[in-house]
Length: 307
Image 1 (cartoon, helix red, strand yellow):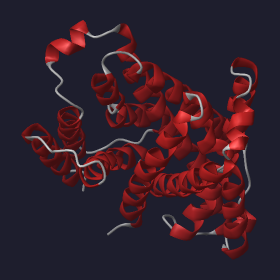
Image 2 (cartoon, rainbow, N blue to C red):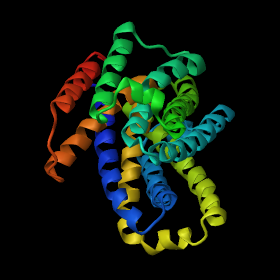
Image 3 (cartoon, one colour):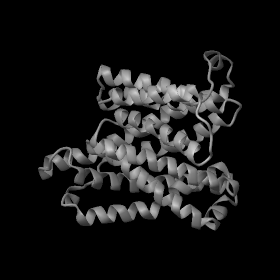
Image 4 (tube, rainbow, N blue to C red):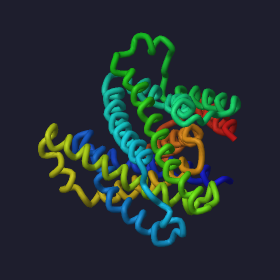
């Protein structure tokens, strides 16, 4: 199994675990305060991870940030923050399931943006797999009918906006990794597709992105939600675990995107919904409907068509 596949599945599993733990914090923090936890408490772990990779990687001397890297990582960090806010707006109305499902159009939009921005296309079979898995996502997201798209509250379309910025975020992080990897391969004579150098580049990209997000969102909370920063620090014990898991999950995602097409990574990442469903069945004792079984089958079929 290719390393990017293993890393993507691991990232999806850990992201599901992070969401489960993060949800428990919303009882004490605002939505934005709980979201900020994933950045501020991941920050020290991200830089420790980069320091570790720098010490053990033979390619560390060839890692030199450039303008393209700074542009892509800055755009990616900002896009991720906007996507988070848009997703909160999408699911805050009366159409939670529809808003969530629309946010999962990310893989389709990533395929388009990847072609436009990075010139990276996907095969017809993979594109078909993305479409089939998206249909499975809609079935898994609840009893959504076509007319719901017409009658839905306007806020639900923030789900599409969230997907667009999540897709842009993935493409930008892929672009940032390539901006570091390409000179390393040319100047240092390294082998393209090396997991070692991908981990090094991913760790640095992650550390810089999380730093920017911590500063930007911290300033927002300071002026828009006074007292939330104090509350975040007050709940540091459970938040520290969320930050650690968030960092490891992001490291898996970033490394996978350094190794392979971002649209394919995000499409495979939809396997997170299966983990979410399994969690709800095993931990919350919820029942699985026939619709959800069909959704799971389509999601798995679509994922298998990616390869």
